[in-house]
Image (cartoon, rainbow, N blue to C red):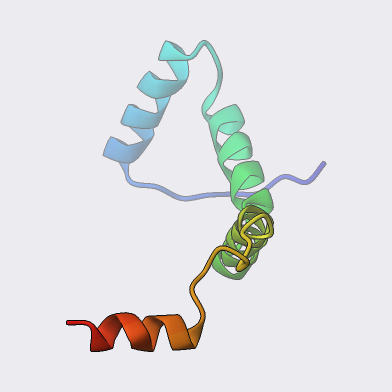
Length: 80
């Protein structure tokens, strides 16, 4: 495990200590969990790629067999 030094203003440190106490942990543990979540969060590209795959899975079940042909659409438009 590596140690890092982070400098923050007094007010930020005070508030971080209060949050850590509320969660029964340390400021170091809060920072460690934040950095871990930041490191492993998906990038915008990865998020969009995942969403694309989810959408592709959903639309695979759509069939064009029930759609009207081009000719049928033109005939309907002419009836107006």
